[in-house]
Length: 324
Ligand code: CP
Image 1 (cartoon, protein in one colour):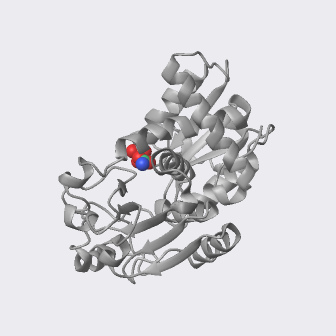
Image 2 (tube, protein in one colour):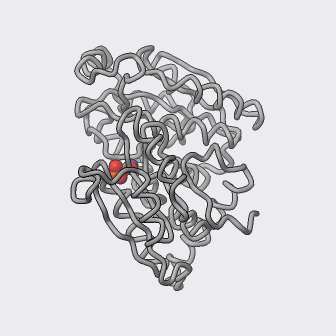
Image 3 (cartoon, helix red, strand yellow):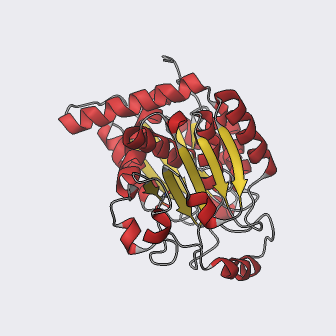
């Protein structure tokens, strides 16, 4: 267990060692226990987290804000439209100035080809640690909450077949940050990881290479499948969600047209029955109900989506308590 992580940025879990990630999970479980017992844990008394959003959020905003309050600190909500970002405040002003006011800066910027670079630039300019609340490449806090959920619900990930699958959605072209972060983290923990997706819905080649290397080091495995039902068969965890085909086309209308070919990629009870008997279903939410996943599955015996959403709180509190 690591005992000094103050000042560390959390932009991707790849930049944290396995021992450091284990520390986050251990602390998250301890903070979850303390909250369940009603024990005070004001570990960040008088500390302030600036939360800067360039994109909408339900869970991320609410869980960071609740988490800071439970840790005895305060979370300051900022967004790109009501600040002076549109009038000249660049990453340098945001990083340097917010870093002087606050003990941490958390940012959500999912703009394609911009978000990750922006968060890294703010981190360079800031004296306070920077947390990635989702960018175009990564959603590390979602993946940490997912890992915590898998460990709680299914035990040691190295015994599990984990299917990270594309699912059809009609609402919008969702970022690829969740599947990228999830395959990166689950391969660190030795799971037999499947990435199941149509050929047009690729992830970045650099991420695929890292996932392969992670699997080699952890003695797990990583394979890519292109058949929705093949991904389901024998899985212990079915994590099926939509994402956009941005690596095939940057045009969202064209991406939406491509996705129409895969309307049948919906997680329903018949598909869940192809997985192992005690398989669980996961989704980071928001989901397009009865398009990505049927009500029968997301509200049924397989679903752990609300435990997953709760674990955002505990995983984020662990990282904030350790780094701020
Ligand atoms: N899963 C997730 O990040 O949810 P929000 O977009 O609502 O924050």
